[in-house]
Length: 207
Image (cartoon, rainbow, N blue to C red):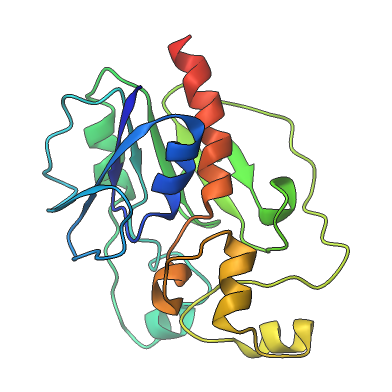
């Protein structure tokens, strides 16, 4: 079973997807992650050793680029910008790698995923830059009915207006395909269906 290193792992949304795709996953995050479902190391993702793995996934902090954090940035709050330094690290290794982040982040969008592409009633677009410069013809997002959007740490007014109600934690979990995280963890998570899909493309790189 190939081993993948999950940098900036959070509570393990990406990890679960890679696990379902057929990987052994090891997570690294600078903060404690008591809900992480696989082997976990609390450490700095920017210095953790990258050797001994067949692939590396990285999800650097996204708050410097998200719309949900725009108000705080306009008020002067600064967030780490680690995509460039992360890419520089990964370009030095000899195994496939993936960098995931939000629209507006400085990543090459080799693959673009949203809930509607992987069978989830979820509006949550994410970009994936890959070492193999993957490419696939992708149509526009199509949400025929109002769907949950998991953003920030509350329910923004535009989410309430779209749905007509405040989603519950159970509804957020169902939309993300995650049943082990709290609301704050969900806000920073990748739906496992996304990385299960990416993991399929990654396995083809090995073949």
